[in-house]
Length: 105
Image 1 (cartoon, rainbow, N blue to C red):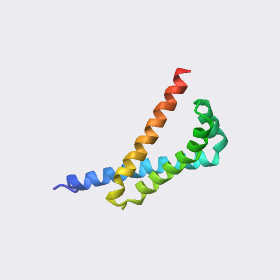
Image 2 (spheres, rainbow, N blue to C red):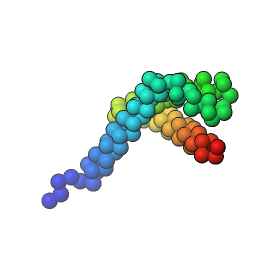
Image 3 (tube, rainbow, N blue to C red):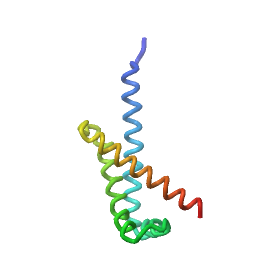
């Protein structure tokens, strides 16, 4: 006799992923807010224009907190899914771009 069906196991796996990713994003955002001078220094090191650096200094933590709340909320409306995917793609793109900047220098 099977204790859990396939669907139940998948739901638990998705829930676990939501918890891990949501918590990671929330901790990252809080660290960026609490240690903002170092975060701004890291952004400046990417050689972006000053206005872009200031914009990203508050946009990235807000995006991370928003994504974390959506993931940890568990009941986000399906209409927010495109926004979630777009915000995730933006964060991932910026992370890859900035890590490439650091590795090439």
